[in-house]
Image (tube, rainbow, N blue to C red; front, side, top):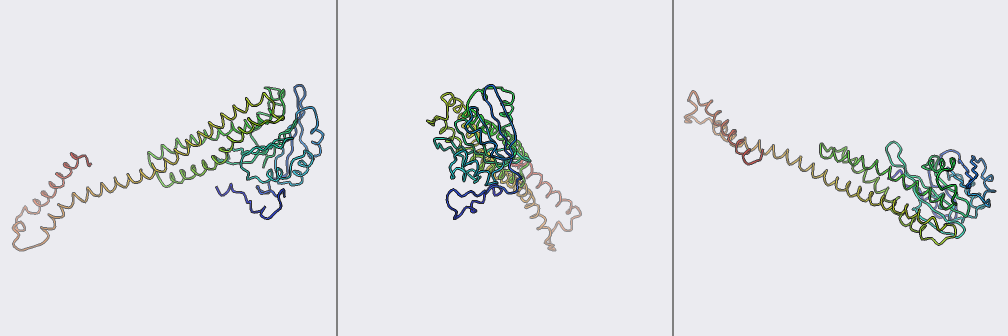
Length: 352
Protein backbone atom coordinates (compact mmCIF):
# COMPACT_ATOMS: atom_id res chain seq x y z
CA UNK A 1 0.00 0.00 0.00
CA UNK A 2 2.89 2.37 0.74
CA UNK A 3 4.07 2.39 -2.86
CA UNK A 4 0.66 3.73 -3.91
CA UNK A 5 0.60 6.65 -1.48
CA UNK A 6 1.20 10.08 -2.98
CA UNK A 7 3.22 12.75 -1.22
CA UNK A 8 0.45 15.29 -0.73
CA UNK A 9 2.63 17.17 1.75
CA UNK A 10 4.26 18.88 -1.26
CA UNK A 11 1.19 21.11 -1.48
CA UNK A 12 1.12 22.08 2.17
CA UNK A 13 0.85 25.85 2.60
CA UNK A 14 0.45 26.66 -1.11
CA UNK A 15 -2.45 28.84 -2.37
CA UNK A 16 -5.51 27.08 -3.92
CA UNK A 17 -5.03 26.42 -7.62
CA UNK A 18 -1.25 26.09 -7.41
CA UNK A 19 -0.16 23.34 -9.79
CA UNK A 20 2.24 20.90 -8.16
CA UNK A 21 2.62 17.40 -9.55
CA UNK A 22 2.75 14.83 -6.75
CA UNK A 23 2.85 11.77 -9.01
CA UNK A 24 5.88 9.78 -10.05
CA UNK A 25 8.75 11.85 -11.36
CA UNK A 26 10.99 11.03 -14.29
CA UNK A 27 8.33 9.44 -16.48
CA UNK A 28 9.76 10.89 -19.69
CA UNK A 29 8.37 13.50 -22.06
CA UNK A 30 4.68 14.30 -22.24
CA UNK A 31 2.97 12.62 -25.18
CA UNK A 32 -0.03 14.28 -26.84
CA UNK A 33 -2.26 12.59 -29.40
CA UNK A 34 -5.28 14.01 -31.21
CA UNK A 35 -8.22 12.34 -32.92
CA UNK A 36 -10.75 14.48 -34.76
CA UNK A 37 -13.79 12.85 -36.33
CA UNK A 38 -17.41 12.90 -37.35
CA UNK A 39 -19.61 10.46 -39.25
CA UNK A 40 -17.70 10.95 -42.50
CA UNK A 41 -14.20 12.13 -41.64
CA UNK A 42 -11.40 11.03 -39.35
CA UNK A 43 -8.04 12.58 -38.57
CA UNK A 44 -5.34 11.34 -36.21
CA UNK A 45 -1.96 12.80 -35.39
CA UNK A 46 0.64 13.11 -32.68
CA UNK A 47 1.14 16.66 -31.42
CA UNK A 48 4.47 18.13 -30.40
CA UNK A 49 3.17 21.51 -29.27
CA UNK A 50 -0.15 21.86 -27.49
CA UNK A 51 -0.88 24.98 -29.56
CA UNK A 52 -1.61 22.69 -32.53
CA UNK A 53 -4.77 21.54 -30.74
CA UNK A 54 -6.18 25.03 -30.19
CA UNK A 55 -8.09 25.30 -33.51
CA UNK A 56 -10.11 22.18 -32.69
CA UNK A 57 -11.84 23.78 -29.72
CA UNK A 58 -14.50 25.46 -31.85
CA UNK A 59 -14.67 22.98 -34.72
CA UNK A 60 -17.87 21.29 -35.88
CA UNK A 61 -16.35 17.85 -35.37
CA UNK A 62 -15.61 15.91 -32.19
CA UNK A 63 -12.02 16.08 -30.96
CA UNK A 64 -10.31 13.77 -28.49
CA UNK A 65 -7.04 15.07 -27.07
CA UNK A 66 -5.14 12.56 -24.96
CA UNK A 67 -2.18 13.65 -22.82
CA UNK A 68 0.21 11.06 -21.40
CA UNK A 69 2.00 12.61 -18.43
CA UNK A 70 0.89 15.39 -16.10
CA UNK A 71 4.28 16.33 -14.70
CA UNK A 72 4.75 19.13 -17.26
CA UNK A 73 2.94 21.97 -15.50
CA UNK A 74 3.41 24.38 -18.41
CA UNK A 75 1.43 22.22 -20.82
CA UNK A 76 -1.36 21.71 -18.29
CA UNK A 77 -1.60 25.46 -17.73
CA UNK A 78 -1.75 26.18 -21.48
CA UNK A 79 -4.55 23.66 -21.96
CA UNK A 80 -6.46 25.09 -19.01
CA UNK A 81 -6.13 28.66 -20.27
CA UNK A 82 -7.24 27.91 -23.83
CA UNK A 83 -10.08 25.51 -23.00
CA UNK A 84 -11.32 27.57 -20.06
CA UNK A 85 -10.64 24.97 -17.37
CA UNK A 86 -10.77 26.26 -13.79
CA UNK A 87 -7.41 26.38 -11.92
CA UNK A 88 -8.81 24.15 -9.16
CA UNK A 89 -9.63 21.50 -11.78
CA UNK A 90 -6.09 21.76 -13.15
CA UNK A 91 -4.85 21.34 -9.59
CA UNK A 92 -6.89 18.12 -9.28
CA UNK A 93 -5.50 16.89 -12.60
CA UNK A 94 -1.87 17.11 -11.50
CA UNK A 95 -2.74 15.93 -7.98
CA UNK A 96 -2.88 12.23 -8.82
CA UNK A 97 -4.28 11.09 -5.47
CA UNK A 98 -7.82 12.25 -6.17
CA UNK A 99 -10.89 10.27 -5.17
CA UNK A 100 -13.03 9.32 -8.21
CA UNK A 101 -15.63 12.03 -8.71
CA UNK A 102 -17.63 14.07 -11.22
CA UNK A 103 -18.09 17.84 -11.22
CA UNK A 104 -20.34 19.85 -13.56
CA UNK A 105 -19.02 23.33 -14.35
CA UNK A 106 -21.65 24.21 -16.94
CA UNK A 107 -19.38 24.65 -19.97
CA UNK A 108 -17.61 21.38 -19.24
CA UNK A 109 -17.79 18.34 -16.98
CA UNK A 110 -14.75 17.13 -15.08
CA UNK A 111 -14.41 13.39 -14.36
CA UNK A 112 -11.60 11.68 -12.47
CA UNK A 113 -11.31 7.94 -11.92
CA UNK A 114 -8.72 5.21 -11.44
CA UNK A 115 -7.48 3.00 -14.26
CA UNK A 116 -6.18 -0.34 -13.00
CA UNK A 117 -3.97 -2.82 -14.80
CA UNK A 118 -1.72 -5.76 -14.03
CA UNK A 119 2.05 -5.41 -14.06
CA UNK A 120 4.14 -8.44 -13.02
CA UNK A 121 1.01 -9.97 -11.50
CA UNK A 122 0.50 -6.92 -9.29
CA UNK A 123 -2.32 -4.40 -9.51
CA UNK A 124 -1.11 -0.95 -10.54
CA UNK A 125 -3.23 2.20 -10.40
CA UNK A 126 -3.19 5.29 -12.58
CA UNK A 127 -5.37 8.38 -12.32
CA UNK A 128 -7.28 9.35 -15.45
CA UNK A 129 -8.86 12.80 -15.66
CA UNK A 130 -11.42 13.56 -18.38
CA UNK A 131 -12.73 16.98 -19.35
CA UNK A 132 -15.92 16.79 -21.42
CA UNK A 133 -16.78 19.85 -23.49
CA UNK A 134 -19.43 20.54 -26.09
CA UNK A 135 -17.38 19.11 -28.95
CA UNK A 136 -14.15 17.97 -27.32
CA UNK A 137 -12.82 15.49 -24.79
CA UNK A 138 -9.46 16.04 -23.11
CA UNK A 139 -8.07 13.08 -21.18
CA UNK A 140 -5.04 13.23 -18.87
CA UNK A 141 -3.03 10.17 -17.84
CA UNK A 142 -0.02 9.77 -15.59
CA UNK A 143 2.02 7.73 -18.04
CA UNK A 144 1.84 6.20 -21.55
CA UNK A 145 -0.21 3.07 -21.97
CA UNK A 146 -3.89 2.59 -21.25
CA UNK A 147 -6.96 0.43 -21.93
CA UNK A 148 -8.35 2.70 -24.67
CA UNK A 149 -6.90 0.92 -27.71
CA UNK A 150 -10.25 -0.76 -28.61
CA UNK A 151 -11.84 2.72 -28.67
CA UNK A 152 -9.08 4.01 -30.93
CA UNK A 153 -9.55 1.05 -33.28
CA UNK A 154 -13.29 1.72 -33.49
CA UNK A 155 -12.61 5.34 -34.32
CA UNK A 156 -10.06 4.46 -37.00
CA UNK A 157 -12.24 1.79 -38.60
CA UNK A 158 -15.55 3.59 -38.19
CA UNK A 159 -17.09 0.69 -36.29
CA UNK A 160 -19.94 1.10 -33.83
CA UNK A 161 -21.67 4.34 -32.89
CA UNK A 162 -18.75 6.30 -31.51
CA UNK A 163 -18.04 8.29 -34.71
CA UNK A 164 -21.71 9.04 -35.24
CA UNK A 165 -22.29 10.30 -31.71
CA UNK A 166 -21.02 13.31 -29.80
CA UNK A 167 -18.33 13.98 -27.25
CA UNK A 168 -20.56 12.72 -24.42
CA UNK A 169 -20.77 9.26 -26.01
CA UNK A 170 -16.97 9.22 -26.44
CA UNK A 171 -16.64 10.02 -22.73
CA UNK A 172 -19.03 7.20 -21.89
CA UNK A 173 -16.95 4.84 -24.03
CA UNK A 174 -13.73 5.78 -22.20
CA UNK A 175 -15.35 5.32 -18.79
CA UNK A 176 -16.88 2.02 -19.91
CA UNK A 177 -13.47 0.69 -21.02
CA UNK A 178 -11.97 1.52 -17.63
CA UNK A 179 -14.84 -0.18 -15.77
CA UNK A 180 -14.76 -3.25 -18.05
CA UNK A 181 -11.04 -3.63 -17.36
CA UNK A 182 -11.89 -4.02 -13.66
CA UNK A 183 -13.46 -7.39 -14.52
CA UNK A 184 -10.10 -8.62 -15.87
CA UNK A 185 -8.48 -7.54 -12.60
CA UNK A 186 -11.18 -9.36 -10.62
CA UNK A 187 -10.71 -12.54 -12.67
CA UNK A 188 -7.04 -12.49 -11.68
CA UNK A 189 -8.05 -12.08 -8.04
CA UNK A 190 -10.51 -14.97 -8.39
CA UNK A 191 -7.79 -17.29 -9.70
CA UNK A 192 -5.45 -16.30 -6.88
CA UNK A 193 -8.14 -16.89 -4.27
CA UNK A 194 -9.00 -20.30 -5.75
CA UNK A 195 -5.34 -21.41 -5.68
CA UNK A 196 -4.98 -20.02 -2.19
CA UNK A 197 -7.96 -22.03 -0.97
CA UNK A 198 -6.34 -25.24 -2.25
CA UNK A 199 -3.05 -24.41 -0.52
CA UNK A 200 -4.88 -23.46 2.64
CA UNK A 201 -6.60 -26.82 2.84
CA UNK A 202 -3.65 -28.94 1.68
CA UNK A 203 -0.66 -27.47 3.47
CA UNK A 204 -0.83 -23.97 4.99
CA UNK A 205 2.49 -22.27 5.67
CA UNK A 206 3.79 -18.83 6.70
CA UNK A 207 4.05 -18.01 2.98
CA UNK A 208 0.31 -18.66 2.69
CA UNK A 209 -0.31 -16.13 5.44
CA UNK A 210 1.80 -13.56 3.57
CA UNK A 211 -0.24 -14.12 0.40
CA UNK A 212 -3.47 -13.69 2.37
CA UNK A 213 -2.30 -10.36 3.79
CA UNK A 214 -1.17 -9.18 0.33
CA UNK A 215 -4.52 -10.07 -1.22
CA UNK A 216 -6.38 -8.37 1.61
CA UNK A 217 -4.34 -5.20 1.20
CA UNK A 218 -4.86 -5.12 -2.58
CA UNK A 219 -8.59 -5.70 -2.23
CA UNK A 220 -8.82 -2.78 0.18
CA UNK A 221 -7.03 -0.61 -2.38
CA UNK A 222 -9.31 -1.91 -5.15
CA UNK A 223 -12.40 -1.14 -3.10
CA UNK A 224 -11.13 2.38 -2.48
CA UNK A 225 -10.74 2.87 -6.24
CA UNK A 226 -14.04 1.30 -7.27
CA UNK A 227 -16.55 2.26 -4.60
CA UNK A 228 -16.81 6.00 -5.51
CA UNK A 229 -17.58 5.05 -9.14
CA UNK A 230 -21.13 4.28 -8.10
CA UNK A 231 -21.71 7.90 -7.13
CA UNK A 232 -19.77 9.16 -10.17
CA UNK A 233 -21.78 7.23 -12.78
CA UNK A 234 -25.04 7.98 -11.00
CA UNK A 235 -24.19 11.69 -11.07
CA UNK A 236 -23.48 11.56 -14.81
CA UNK A 237 -26.72 9.70 -15.42
CA UNK A 238 -28.81 12.25 -13.51
CA UNK A 239 -26.90 15.34 -14.65
CA UNK A 240 -29.15 17.96 -16.22
CA UNK A 241 -26.44 19.20 -18.54
CA UNK A 242 -26.66 20.29 -22.15
CA UNK A 243 -23.37 18.47 -22.71
CA UNK A 244 -25.05 15.07 -22.28
CA UNK A 245 -27.54 14.10 -24.98
CA UNK A 246 -30.86 12.47 -24.16
CA UNK A 247 -29.69 9.20 -25.73
CA UNK A 248 -26.58 8.85 -23.53
CA UNK A 249 -28.06 8.15 -20.04
CA UNK A 250 -29.24 4.68 -21.10
CA UNK A 251 -25.60 3.76 -21.85
CA UNK A 252 -24.47 5.30 -18.56
CA UNK A 253 -27.06 3.12 -16.82
CA UNK A 254 -25.34 0.07 -18.30
CA UNK A 255 -21.99 1.24 -16.90
CA UNK A 256 -23.70 1.79 -13.56
CA UNK A 257 -24.86 -1.84 -13.57
CA UNK A 258 -21.31 -2.99 -14.33
CA UNK A 259 -20.03 -0.84 -11.49
CA UNK A 260 -22.46 -2.47 -9.06
CA UNK A 261 -21.29 -5.91 -10.23
CA UNK A 262 -17.66 -4.93 -9.66
CA UNK A 263 -18.42 -3.58 -6.18
CA UNK A 264 -20.36 -6.73 -5.22
CA UNK A 265 -17.52 -8.94 -6.47
CA UNK A 266 -14.92 -6.95 -4.55
CA UNK A 267 -16.98 -7.20 -1.36
CA UNK A 268 -17.40 -10.97 -1.87
CA UNK A 269 -13.66 -11.43 -2.38
CA UNK A 270 -12.92 -9.36 0.74
CA UNK A 271 -15.20 -11.59 2.79
CA UNK A 272 -13.58 -14.70 1.33
CA UNK A 273 -10.04 -13.49 2.08
CA UNK A 274 -11.04 -12.47 5.62
CA UNK A 275 -12.52 -15.95 6.08
CA UNK A 276 -9.28 -17.45 4.79
CA UNK A 277 -7.37 -15.77 7.58
CA UNK A 278 -9.66 -17.41 10.14
CA UNK A 279 -9.34 -20.72 8.28
CA UNK A 280 -5.54 -20.42 8.33
CA UNK A 281 -5.48 -19.84 12.07
CA UNK A 282 -7.94 -22.69 12.65
CA UNK A 283 -5.87 -24.99 10.44
CA UNK A 284 -2.70 -24.19 12.40
CA UNK A 285 -4.57 -24.79 15.65
CA UNK A 286 -5.87 -28.14 14.38
CA UNK A 287 -2.41 -29.20 13.26
CA UNK A 288 -1.02 -28.27 16.65
CA UNK A 289 -3.81 -30.21 18.34
CA UNK A 290 -3.01 -33.27 16.22
CA UNK A 291 0.65 -33.06 17.16
CA UNK A 292 -0.19 -32.66 20.84
CA UNK A 293 -2.64 -35.56 20.59
CA UNK A 294 0.03 -37.91 19.21
CA UNK A 295 2.56 -36.81 21.83
CA UNK A 296 -0.01 -37.21 24.60
CA UNK A 297 -0.92 -40.73 23.46
CA UNK A 298 2.74 -41.73 23.32
CA UNK A 299 3.35 -40.30 26.78
CA UNK A 300 0.23 -42.03 28.12
CA UNK A 301 1.36 -45.40 26.75
CA UNK A 302 4.77 -45.03 28.35
CA UNK A 303 3.47 -43.98 31.79
CA UNK A 304 2.56 -47.54 32.98
CA UNK A 305 5.61 -48.97 31.20
CA UNK A 306 7.82 -46.46 33.01
CA UNK A 307 6.07 -47.39 36.26
CA UNK A 308 6.95 -51.09 35.80
CA UNK A 309 10.52 -50.26 34.80
CA UNK A 310 10.80 -47.97 37.83
CA UNK A 311 9.65 -50.65 40.22
CA UNK A 312 12.15 -53.19 38.94
CA UNK A 313 14.89 -50.56 38.91
CA UNK A 314 14.84 -50.13 42.71
CA UNK A 315 17.31 -53.05 43.24
CA UNK A 316 16.02 -54.22 46.63
CA UNK A 317 17.68 -57.44 47.83
CA UNK A 318 14.47 -59.31 48.59
CA UNK A 319 12.74 -58.73 45.24
CA UNK A 320 11.92 -62.29 44.16
CA UNK A 321 12.00 -61.62 40.41
CA UNK A 322 15.63 -60.47 40.51
CA UNK A 323 16.89 -64.05 41.00
CA UNK A 324 14.44 -65.57 38.54
CA UNK A 325 16.14 -66.56 35.23
CA UNK A 326 13.12 -65.42 33.16
CA UNK A 327 12.42 -62.27 35.20
CA UNK A 328 13.90 -59.86 32.64
CA UNK A 329 11.87 -61.30 29.74
CA UNK A 330 8.75 -61.46 31.87
CA UNK A 331 9.05 -57.78 32.76
CA UNK A 332 9.51 -56.86 29.09
CA UNK A 333 6.50 -58.98 28.16
CA UNK A 334 4.32 -57.32 30.79
CA UNK A 335 5.36 -53.86 29.53
CA UNK A 336 4.69 -54.85 25.92
CA UNK A 337 1.26 -56.24 26.75
CA UNK A 338 0.37 -53.05 28.64
CA UNK A 339 1.40 -50.88 25.69
CA UNK A 340 -0.48 -53.08 23.18
CA UNK A 341 -3.61 -53.12 25.33
CA UNK A 342 -3.59 -49.31 25.56
CA UNK A 343 -3.18 -48.94 21.79
CA UNK A 344 -6.17 -51.24 21.20
CA UNK A 345 -8.20 -49.29 23.74
CA UNK A 346 -7.36 -45.94 22.10
CA UNK A 347 -8.34 -47.26 18.66
CA UNK A 348 -11.71 -48.47 19.93
CA UNK A 349 -12.33 -45.05 21.42
CA UNK A 350 -11.40 -43.40 18.10
CA UNK A 351 -8.47 -41.49 19.55
CA UNK A 352 -6.06 -42.98 17.00
